[in-house]
Image (cartoon, rainbow, N blue to C red):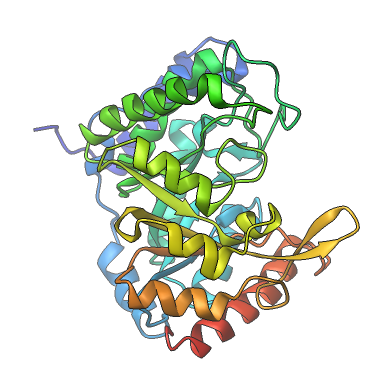
Length: 346
């Protein structure tokens, strides 16, 4: 059993370990490994914070949450809004302090844990950038982005991104890590079997640590819709690969996400859900606040509850019409809350 240590010693050790890494900026965080005792450190006020939050928290069959950096890069402010204003007890972690979650150092991890404890928030999943890169040996994708949500990693670094993401899941007390299946190819057929094998290999590693990978359907990636996600899930036979179902992304790719895309999905393989809305525009689509777009979210929430789904429904605002990320998220959350209430899921 690892030896438990005090928070002060944790910070001292973490700082020393982070300072000892001398690789490139992108590799700094990757080279660092969380000490084996870090996930076992309890929050000093965890039970008190949870009880305090209980009085104003939401009641739902789902883990109602928001991706933290949709509110603010200031992690403390994001947690304050999510917990105190929105009434959430869950949050999804993607980036903070202008750093991708994978790049956080030991001191930042400790500080993030302290803030989560302060606001009585639990983590739905680590929204990692795993496999959001070009597939090696294939033509460069026209959708490829060099730096997406402060992530700048190569194909050859993906094994390290995986290990780091699994470590972070343990540190933040979640059993889920979001992933993708590489930037979209005009013809993915010659590479699809190898991509599926890579997903299976990663899932096997994750499963040995009790962690499930959540493959997100995302426009610009090789799996964009419910129809495409169903094919991948049927090909990758692992209990440690589930779907991060994103109806907004599917709708923006031209699919009628609900009911058409959703009805194709194996319901026992849905492990997380992102919530955003979209509207048709001259350029194809634009993001919209929840309830103001083309996705039938009331129907979708009803169907998820009917089918026994009880994991995260996480607001991924994306829409920027509120003037600031915080205000845009506030308005989109108001729409999402109303939709959940209409679906009798809140």
